Length: 233
Ligand SMILES: [Zn+2]
Ligand SMILES: [Zn+2]
Image (cartoon, rainbow, N blue to C red; front, side, top):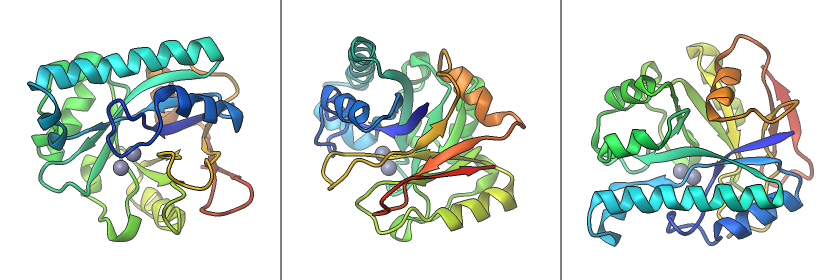
């Protein structure tokens, strides 16, 4: 079974063209069994809401609705967050394993320095992964404050940068995740993610798989490749 670890819906992520329903339907059609809904969480979104509490409320509402719709059509939806660093808006950080109480207690997490973001995510039992490092000149942040790096199969960019990501993961001893980051504005929907025998009951169980010393298998859909390929580490 495949868990796409990076997904958006336009109710929150302004750059995404798909509603959560459309995103889930398309994922199901290509054989994705579950998605982690990692909508953008950025200071720039504050202007669309009366206050930060409203942003957090809408963020969680979108997740709840997506989860419930996913249940009705047989696609499991897990909770995640893609934080845009206020200090450098090209740096996107995926928080996995935190629940809704994380943003409720830390609504200005995007303003924190990297070290504090990781520390906070850890306090909630989660892990912090840099999304799409190396994408079009994007810089890798200090890996001392990362638990993982992502192979992004976003079809809009010319490569997944998987060789660079694998090299960093090996050298710095951090995990690798994989996701489509599909926004609905590209010619095809990548088929990628974490491969599991059965769907874990919650996001914490996914984090357990990722951080265990057992072999992990990812499905990587290289940009414009006809078929995805399995990679284990
Ligand atoms: Zn991103
Ligand atoms: Zn994204």
